[in-house]
Length: 297
Image 1 (cartoon, rainbow, N blue to C red):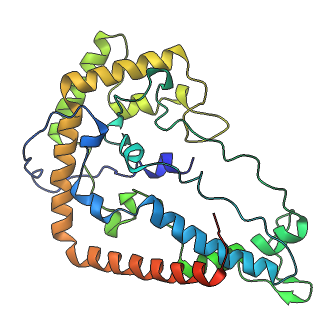
Image 2: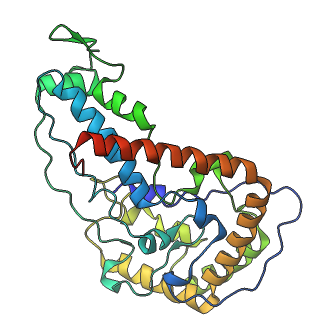
């Protein structure tokens, strides 16, 4: 649910000077072949879970300090994507997973339903969010002051807002970016688009096909609809075939690799500081979880 947008983080920008040269362009026919230099710096699903668990421990303890019970959310389902699933979608190439059932259309993961969440009482809501149901600020509850932004705010403050996994946009200066004008991507997108037109589909780029509003869910903004229409399945099938016939994925990975290397070389100190800060937060989170003596998700 939360991952769909986070995993499409690589943006576009106006290039400065000539684009970085490409190394070898591999023929990519599987998600498992997609590896990038920036991967070593991206936050993992497990790291995100750890930070959320620590935040939840603090939040629960805060709510309990008012004599209330807090049914903590379960984060396992919300961050259930595997690294392979996260690699299957990107702003640069849309959706790519030859091993996925064609009947799934553009649904990269087969979204799971975390189930109905327990009802939260007015009292718990007041201390949890620091506002009541009418959105009026709650600063005191039962004679005791309420933290800024409630107990949820206190939980987030302890370890910082947990980053989304595999979201390079959270790296220093927004991470590496592939310009929309990169000539290698412009060329392969044009060849992909020509292939799609030959199959009866008119899209300028793979992302345009993947992000077509016709496949989006009204109930779950940003997510693919759970009901996959014949049109979506046909489009996704043609999209995959054109990616394979043009080796769009091989070109995309080579282009991303070139920009990743350029970014890493120019941000060595900032990336080192980012890694150290994340390690410190994870160390603190592990201590909070151990001291809390409870499973937060």
